[in-house]
Length: 350
Image (cartoon, rainbow, N blue to C red; front, side):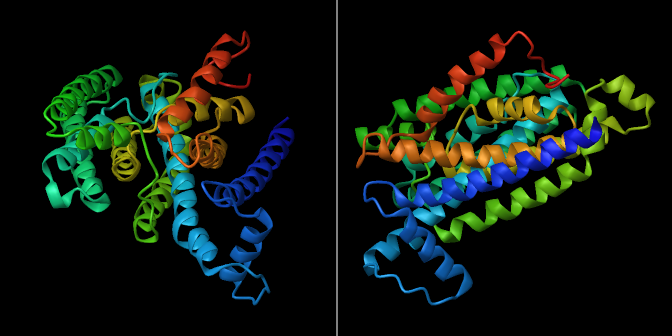
């Protein structure tokens, strides 16, 4: 039985890696200006390997591929993987099947910070200025959640943590709405609303490296702690009886989750449903073993958001719609179907 599960797992890993490569090529190829996927593939091979492949493309097309669409597609993959990973971690430490990366109010803190820059920042209201404001807002909210929800790591109460996150989310959401209402012109309000619903439009090479590094660090730490995450599913008391330091493990998971969510949300805005839906899909594939669950969720989340971003760009091309609308339209019905399945449970495969 164990051998079969491992074979199934490796099959899904290979399949998702193939889908990830295909989705990256398609995400670069299509948009307001369509480019042949074959040209995109050959161009990328030439760039990454340094080989001289003879392809005749205008310089402007090369610029679109390398400077605009590739960074955006990579940021979509990084963000999707990060949100899915945080979803797994949040659902584990709260032991709540409807937890997602935003349950601690981090997105609301980021939104308040970003909208503050958009409304009052003036010349600072560029992408980096907005991202900086969002990051500060997210970190402030994360610190407050840690202080109030865990009493500086002294308690591992899930209820206290979740209620603290919900209360802070409500407060920061109210601040965001107040800021939008106080905007001096419609353009500021429109920019704020577009950012709140999620956008990858500000992706550039210089901004994708930091979230990628943070994602890799959190991914590695999560794999190292995967056995502890498995134990947490049995409850705090059982985990303590088995020799685990529950407060320490939960504090570490909470800290790395807050850090990763803060970095991602500061660049893309609030993109919902990925951290909620993707971990459930992965559980149906591989069960509750967190080592396998984390790997599949990151790959699946990356593919999901790249495809969603592609739809957001081509649906009403050349206009772009906020990506959060697409993820909600895809993720919402799918999650309802998942709930309606008679054989579905939080534990995944039986």
